[in-house]
Length: 139
Image (cartoon, rainbow, N blue to C red; front, side, top):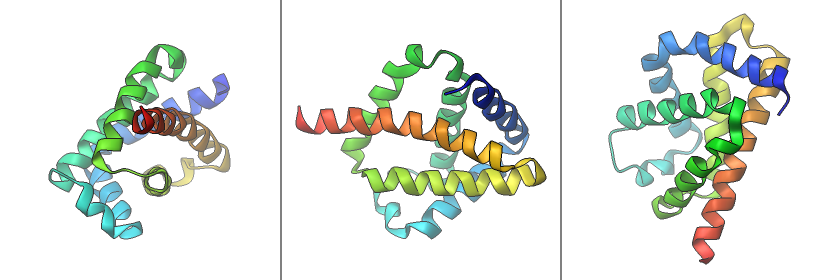
């Protein structure tokens, strides 16, 4: 990931932080709109889960500057997701809901360049989780 992309992601995430509660609610609503059957994977209230997911996104975004140091944490998260029944397609649906949420809350600040940077960041994180999940499945 290029340094300029990291900066864009971190700066735009900073604009989301003050709206984290409603953003997490909208994110979860959109995710369940895109893929309603995900509800069966949730072991907690969707609002609580939305905040937990946003907290992990926050952790990942702040760690983009030193991604390799953060990699083991992402790998552990990926291994846990296999036990929840999360599929690769589910990661794609999360990306779709996340990008929709970012666009909603960033408004005019959600440019093509910002969208591209977020896609790169999310793809990098999700790829590590998917690989870790797959390794855990076959271990």
